[in-house]
Length: 371
Image (cartoon, rainbow, N blue to C red):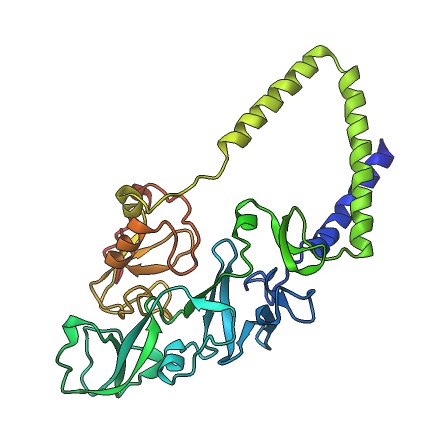
């Protein structure tokens, strides 16, 4: 029995190394997006679907995607189940790329997630224009640059303090956080939905299939670890069966009862399937923030609403999604969540929020209140 325990301990030590080799997942940093098929990290992983899906790491350990006609962009997130990748300019000023006509998806496998719309960019000085979003990375203390949809009915007469810079085609949901792209080939959504790995079939670059393990070749260490796992699992199974046969009937009854409870628990823990948006009660359970005069935002670096692109002002109400802590104008995110159950930035499903009474905090000496 002591020998069996030793073997099990040895297998547990080998298992992470074998898994790291077989799963084919890598990353530039612990906080960065995971990289797997159809993408690949050059010099670290086997070839991906094509060279257009090759990624690299820069000196800051940021993940880099190179578009053939536009150059390098940082990758903020990859949603494999939705086949979405969110990228940004290395200076966090994606709007400048569009304004300079320096963003193109030509010769790449990607498309915009949202339709292109024509925007007119204005240089407003010295009076700020409160109606439209201030593009911080293009503005300074002496002037403000704003982007206005050309079709907007509320901008028929530009302010006398504003001069037209240029017009550009920009995806409708673009924000300071970057732009979302999607790809159609390879289509791995079925594999992702079924919890399987997507990859080449038998090493063929023209055939894609789903498998329970990665299609990448296994190293000798991985094969050895798997073989040891099979042998040790067999020994454990034989030992357990022998103990079960010799055990009293009451122990067998307890084991069966425990197995039934575990099976019932596993069934009850099946993931929920969300259809459509969230109901009003769930949305209202997410924390709200009333901004004070000093604009003490939860994250001082995020000063604009990613949905309407409006800069946060005092006495405005923000709402935070508790799972990821992203925040927006309450009116903007409420409308979004009625139609979509996911966060508009990271596309993750929000986790269950606490009862509203548990997050209601109003402190009279605070500059802003959460309720």
